[in-house]
Image (cartoon, rainbow, N blue to C red; front, side, top):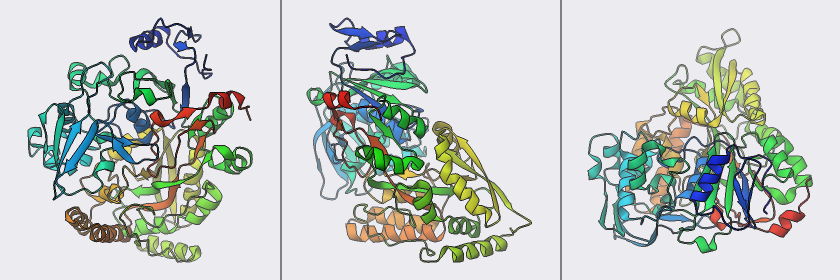
Length: 553
């Protein structure tokens, strides 16, 4: 029997009933954990330190990578990622687009929801309308503004029936776009575009995502969800490519304490740990180099000031705070993972983007930056006898998550700033920053798709992920112009000009461009280099013999 982790399941009845509901109850070779959850002879189990506790498994309310890691196993959209992050057919088996790039027609694959109900084009129509319905209050609703009338529907100016999506037949979906989107096939891999089972959602309402009622069309089904302990997914026998899925059970643990996650990985309880403790990087390089995945991805770690709160509407204060952050010290002495310091919003290597926009002080020696920052703070009314007292909201319950914020806190004391660090778990953090309940926060952003707009669209005033209320009409005008530009080179130039304006306004305080900093046991195969850092479990295999031979270190 495949070894289970040391954490026992919390409910005998729930675990047994749900596994039986998936067609596994009573099978030969079954066994039970101490609490009764069924395990089976020869099962391949993937134990995943997933980083944090999911707030939701509804694709219309999700907003985090750790939620995406689960949702993307349960549901697939029109396209999905291959093992290298490249879009491939999923719920749609083929498609075609009009010459102007504004109309796309998708042929839906003949496949089923996990309860045996056929997946149809109407499921996508229903899902996209639900996503944009103001009553849903979806944080990612703006993502579907790409669909004709999407913004007007979401703002309540037009009914959901006017959205530019239709199903002329059960297996034909037609999407009309508000602008050309050369990146559309990547765009459709995001959970905001996923279908949802109308017959289940309308019956169960918001509880449709619970074990026992959840229905998906992905490679796995939802078996258990014990908050702050684990989520268990089981291989979906009705998945259209089930024959090629090698993992039987995917167990996700909310390992926001990265030190504890490392200990569990070393003890053989985890196969992958998302995020590693930075202070352990030297030890890991010396003792477990084969587990390190430190590849640069399309992600920016940054700070954001709430410009609706005084004094952060003053660009002098925002510039001073940015000047005083010693990025080189952070990446070389604090984080120590090898990630490059960031002086722009958009990370390097993104598709169809010239780059070039950077903070003006990049070449300035750090002592000169501090001098300039003090001058700006004094001009804004602060000094040794009148400190700016503020707070820095950070995510994660891990003690190691404080290392960088504490360093920044000390750096800011040099420019008359007394910042209190407020540390909350990830779910509370994202609720607060989306409701603008903070003064300064440290969100970070991983690209939803390989295009600069995934970062720059957050500079729009109506974007739910514009946490700091930044709004510059000149910047938005350039972003709008870029949406109408068909030439990719010219479009890239317009986006770069928009970024330059935002950097001059200090809309963000970029700190460094993120790498994966993930620990993957070498017996886990199929965890490739993916610039968006999305790894679907359907592509993974586990060398069982190598796993058994792995000694605790």
